[in-house]
Image 1: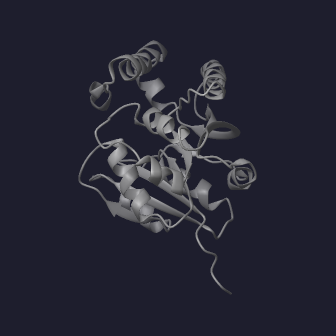
Image 2: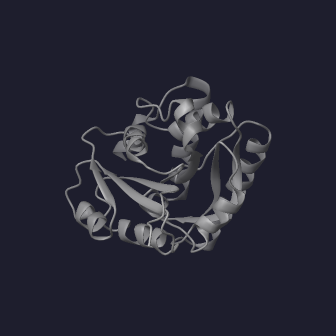
Image 3: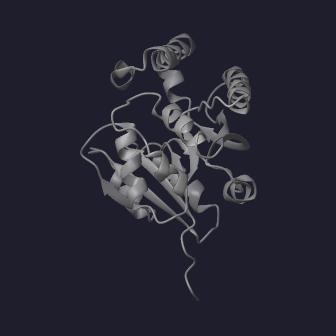
Length: 231
């Protein structure tokens, strides 16, 4: 039987993600599709991240430089698919994710209806409000993302220049806006689940405060909140 060509490339940047990566890759494999690949771009993990990725059939790329844009761009250059799905290692996909994506995605890029899978109900209520905010701004032509998972048409991604290698926070907003000038960036009502690990670590107030600072610095100062990577 002829092997299906790759249509979807899942790109996962990692650094010491052994606790979460297995579930993420398994949720991708559970899509039951032969036309997707998983690429893990690892930044010098000292735990079992790389071993887990290889055991589960992911292609592993080593990237010595740190930064969200650097890792994602490295994975995109190696990807074979026409549709690029960038995801954090702590994301879980529902079993019909690719089926829904194939049905609805006709755009330059998109963000998803995100929810926590390991947090209290009241925290997910906050996510519902945030998703409504994202959806409204995106419809108004001012796209904004939620950071954990997004998708791009490969041709549009490349035409937009990919991620910035020097922006350390809100690099996803930056790319979404550049993509939107070429072909629409949208909010898709497809459920994707992520961990609330930073929320648990920092507490709700600090979590909201940090993300508010990041957003303010990006939109009004055109700067990154570098301290985010050291908290």
